[in-house]
Length: 141
Image 1: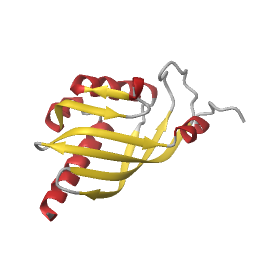
Image 2 (image 1 turned 90 degrees about the vertical axis):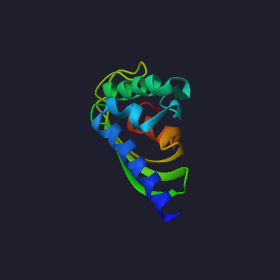
Image 3 (image 1 turned 60 degrees about the vertical axis):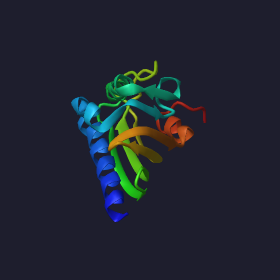
């Protein structure tokens, strides 16, 4: 069981690095063809397939060029990793129709990665959306 946990945590590390380094070419190596990400920041809250993931990643990076995730803690099994992460980014480009604010966002979030056949099958992301909007200056006082 320890080896399985190590393998799933290694896959999470490679997946997070793919995001941080914008290594779009690694998407087929790390995620399944039927991949789905559920993330409130995604258009409609979901992106499907490898192409959908790349499009979502490119959208994030165009709005937040310094987007960076850090995995802080993990709890894993043979086919799932739950993790706490820290997100750091600056809103320097248009994102989801919102013009750049120049504001920095730093927040903690939770993620759940489901793995099948050695690849990420599903990724669920949970974060305080109000906190993100407040940091961007997009809420009324």
